[in-house]
Image 1 (cartoon, rainbow, N blue to C red):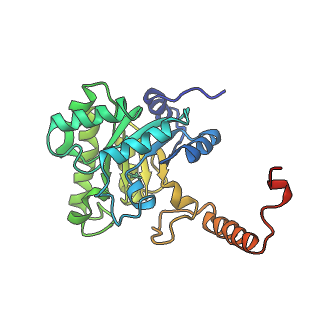
Image 2 (cartoon, protein in one colour):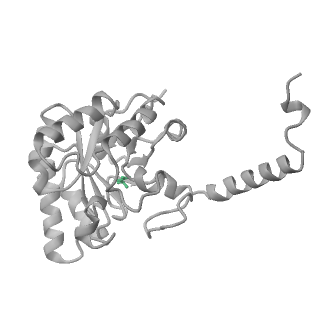
Length: 267
Ligand code: KIV
């Protein structure tokens, strides 16, 4: 039987050249399914605000909402490592709040690690959380909580100066104690360079094939997000069609008196 994954196991996978598989999950049923499939890490992403709650960006997501999703994921008792996203405004204001909110995700949510967006400018925050023995995964490149600074969801690090800054960011978060780093929306050559220079695993999303692992949003791979389909997403199923078919047949059968049958009824 598969054993429970820790941050140590995830870091060893880089040394073993064993690709790290990561998906987002926000609830109990999807967590159960993906864990049975053998996923290595589950990210309770603040993307929940977009794909579950219907917001335009991740900015409105609150810590209480992240706690709700994290608890639902943890109730499935996954063998995968559970990492919870720190939402916007839960770690940027000061170190005390950052420590308290990371602690709440672990204590009240049951997360085994937290993720926050940012590079060199966040090293004090990463150090402060790591000093509480809470593993931190950093996230650099296209960081969705910075959408207003970036002027949209744009690939980052195309120019040399920006690419060099991203390399410095990656080295800085490693030095501050992050156990892994998400590289989002950067050129594949840059992701390859960062992956080669770091001892900690890189987890790519829209960062090409050379990262130590890959993460995608579960709703994207299942074809549940009609609105927005970035180039880096691969759709592995068309669940929208499956749900449309089931709901359409249910409506037709109830209206036509075909459901419920005697077999679905009590005497
Ligand atoms: O919120 C999220 O789902 C994420 C991943 C896409 C990396 O941050």
